Length: 355
Image (cartoon, rainbow, N blue to C red; front, side, top):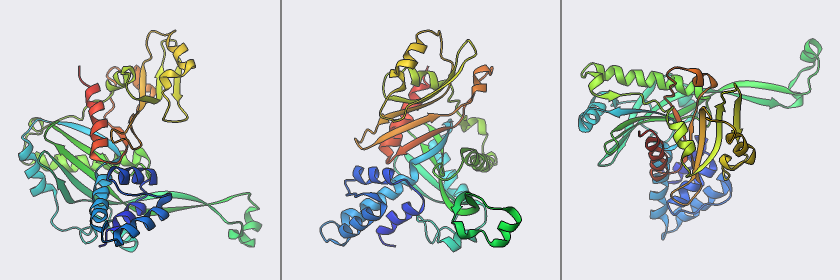
């Protein structure tokens, strides 16, 4: 494996170039315009005796950062049990000694090997610090793609049977390898399911995989522990919406809410550099109602690193506003190029849940 394989692997995994560029900058590595030019530039630095060591290590760090962070659909549990005991159980009972992903990990499988892989989810490896551990789960998933076909795709026989069309679409399933992460944090006493795939899959499909992975892990713990003494959750994130909206920091990119007069409203900014709370139409409307009754929110902040922005989405539906006990147990944490970015956003979310 060469260091440039880490950049190629992220490109193959459909990581956005903007996120990759921010990760390079946060690691003091050079970037250019687009994937192709940037990879060419990185190859030059890797060939230089002066910079090869720095860039080899930097690209590995970037790859790990974007595997653990990036764009994730997240569910959070409070830890009630002992951190060391829980981590040891994961290593002995959840981590698998031998998987088909081992030979290429942390890179994705070659295409043919992935196509032939079974539909399962495997705990392949982990990254660890003194107070945190990330267990990485790999799986093959299918995404549905729709393409416009060239005009010559229709044969004369098909035209005779069905007539002519202005545009012809083809539908196909494509196999992708996803990298889900379970992070256990000693300092904040939480366990997070960080689910991959928001760039290529529908949130509903990711949530189904989350339910499967969550069930698999909790059932394993049930054999040795009383679950009520180990985990509490998943944490309800609905109460965070109002506090995130009222907190003056950051920028509200989108909000969905209802009013006491039965109005349903969704407000969204064209750019994440602007705050919807400053929109004159919104300000005027807010001044006329007693309460917004928000059911979803997207909020952005400048990255604490100084490169790019980070985003938190607490998704919800209008039905929640009339629910007796409104509950949202997943969030989207987006555009995080490093642990620094991700911890910043998670800190904002946990802070908004404090009484």
